[in-house]
Amino acid sequence: MDSRREVEESSTAPILESKRTRSNGKGKSIDGDHSPPHAATVVTTKATPLQKGGMKKGIAILDFILRLGAIGAALGAAVIMGTNEQILPFFTQFLQFHAQWDDFPMFKFFVVANGAAAGFLILSLPFSIVCIVRPLAAGPRFLLVIVDLVLMALVVAAASSAAAVVYLAHNGSQDANWNAICQQFTDFCQGSSLAVVASFVASVFLACLVVVSSVALKRT
Amino acid sequence: MDSRREVEESSTAPILESKRTRSNGKGKSIDGDHSPPHAATVVTTKATPLQKGGMKKGIAILDFILRLGAIGAALGAAVIMGTNEQILPFFTQFLQFHAQWDDFPMFKFFVVANGAAAGFLILSLPFSIVCIVRPLAAGPRFLLVIVDLVLMALVVAAASSAAAVVYLAHNGSQDANWNAICQQFTDFCQGSSLAVVASFVASVFLACLVVVSSVALKRT
Image (cartoon, rainbow over all chains, first blue to last red; front, side, top):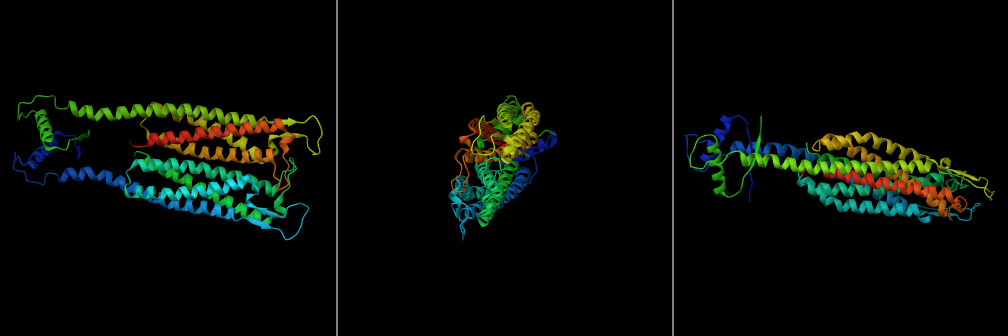
């Protein structure tokens, strides 16, 4: 099955002309016109989709680059937080003198969520390549929107809960009688803050990815 | 200018047939066929947009309902957290005996973010109505995707950071020497947890809104 689309002009004279030409193409010579029968039709059919496809191909390449950025940021956040540890060389008034990332469940969630986001983003790369090769395909594009949206929510949630813990570690809470542990564990707090920033960068990349995919889905 | 789209079958015999019919419509009777020339074309042209418009109108109505749900959840979360307060009738080993929602900056952010989300969602209702009235308009639909995406990130961030504080208030942290204040302030913690749950419900509504708008933007 090959289906052809033919966009014809409104005025009647060119319609008659083109019909005669096409009949001519079937080998039934009505008048003496011997112009190549399908040339005009082919130009009209392919011009608009090609232009749109070019714009969408550019969007798909931007999508791929943003995706690489998001992978880097999420992976970096997970690695920085996952290797975050500090052993103090002296005793303080506190009992513990060893801070590690898995002391707080929010930091565990942070590492798992950012690692999972990086993994799923790597798995989504082939679909992004499909979108570059076939810019007008709506199916893979729609799949990418859903995946990016879920990953964005996951990364934002991980970054925010870790940021809350980092804030409390820095400032403590007078009302709840919680001490600012960053006065002792400076390196640990610095590593945690860096990981949180990297995770927020990853979520900004993911938000841009969703916006870019929405632009690509938009029927303009 | 009215441009007609004609999708023709692949086999040569029907193409010749349809061409003869159209030539016939112009008054040049080649054979004895007298079928109405434009009837089939008109049906093909108008059926698809109408059907698509109906589907998109349904999506727009679903969007409106989800939006109302998100407004209710976000507003509920902000009000529950904003009125959250507990005064203990007795002294404990702690100095304070009065817990209020603005003791923690994360809870302040929570109230502001959920209130702002509810406000912007109310402001976006007219655009949602425009999408119901004109289902094929891509502009307002695209605006709604962007607004919903930003609000979703905001609400997820607020809910997650508040959830981290609520978790610490419930369980404390042995390693950081933070006490579980919920052992004293039970009602306060219950209110906070309820607000966090309401906020997560709002973010699920917002995620559904983004997905629904993406479906509407999809060119199928």
